[in-house]
Image (cartoon, rainbow, N blue to C red; front, top):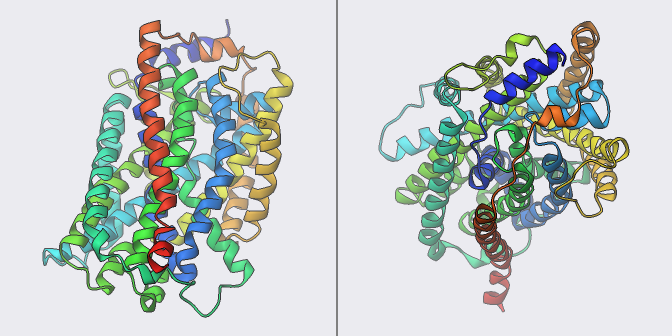
Length: 501
């Protein structure tokens, strides 16, 4: 056995499989539902009005196939690092490194944007209690928040997973309470037309669509922690299928309320607001308890649930790449007590602080959506490569029409990126160039030969019959709840038509 294999085996043995279906779902949804929905995504209502649901629904449609494709790959290769490992085997190390770098930048950007979003909603929350901290730069609040979550992630994935589940359920509880309280205040007439003289030009519409689609990015977060997921052959594909629809439901529900609560004359404010929900409520005169409950749910539920996996997931990519020779070995160190890639976690914190220093959520969002789209396209290419190179690989889950889904996804994402922010595109190009330079200067010299699939993933246990039955029951409950919530989220957009009729 080579030194690489031996070291890899030792390190992998130290990572603890502590995440179940619930944690995998909460980690994934936590990454996705946050800064996109409550800042850049919702602010687009100020540009397209109630047609936001069309953008949101199309975003769901172009995200389902990639989720299923990643479900198949994650069940077959349940390793830390997600796309990096799929591309390494399905394509080559150059593509793997490109995907790894872009994923790290994009998900760290999500976390950085989330800390800024937290700062904005936190300030508005304090305003409702007549505490004015407008003098305090939001970036300092964001950096302090990053420090707290670095400590949380440093101390272990199990502790981080429990905290994540707590954040998500707190967010859902606050959301349901807020929905129930605000229903009587919704104005059915606000759903008529598009609330503006004309729609934006096509180029701008595509840019808007990109920001709405960004509300779905990060849907594969759970696969990056495949080495720390229990029974990944079942839990990862299930988490992906559940998560994408729950993300749609949450986006659609919150957008419905924002459309129904804010008069059309304030859409210009929404389009430029840093905290559209809070600013929209203030403009509509719904101050006090509505804003307090909303800000508590968004800041201490939605935002915190995104920051947590925004540190955990990219740290696993850095760890995997370092372990594989793509980055210096120091980043592959596992803490002897907490069993976490602590050096990689610290690096993620440093990148967070650099992005926070820009102070621009829109720029951070554009960089993130471009890099994740690149990562997903490489993932699709890796899927095709794995099918060709490893036709006999054990695949516990098979994505329906997976090959066709890859081609469709690549074409759609390429088309979408044509209309992305030009400065962010230049940034993505610079990231790609730096990655290639680093690959030929360092990685190519240090990358070892590939070990077998079996050696890399280790032994994946099968649950006992009793455990499998229990897992299936839990999944059924999640599936039923997801179907109900999705139907409700779509159905409420038809209610204004019924009332008008």
